Amino acid sequence: MKMHNPPHPGSVLQDTVLRGITVTEFAERLSVSRVALSRVVNGRVAVSAELAIRLAAALGGSAETWMRMQVAYDLWHAQRKNRPKIHRIEFGLGV
Image (cartoon, rainbow, N blue to C red; front, top):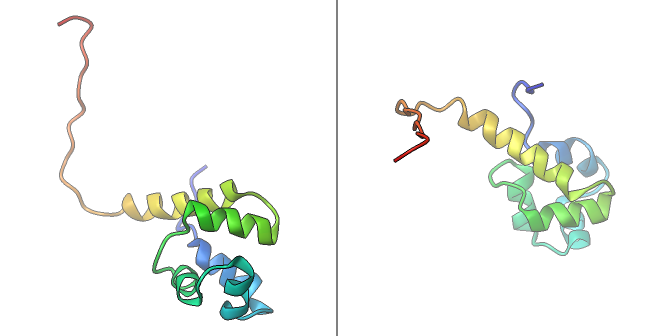
């Protein structure tokens, strides 16, 4: 089932984790820069595989969950962009 307008993983962090801790404190716990974490939290950059691993280690759960959230967000937004018509390539059984 496709989600309607899935949240950016950064907004999930903002709505849950960052209610009781600052971005600076959380960045220190993750061993990432405050600026890098702030960009994710504010939805300016995607969650990387490395950050997903660190989030899973700090918060529990799995890195795959964080990556799935990012992919769902990226695909939903990409599907709404205008693009030229793409014609399907037909593959024959012989040459």
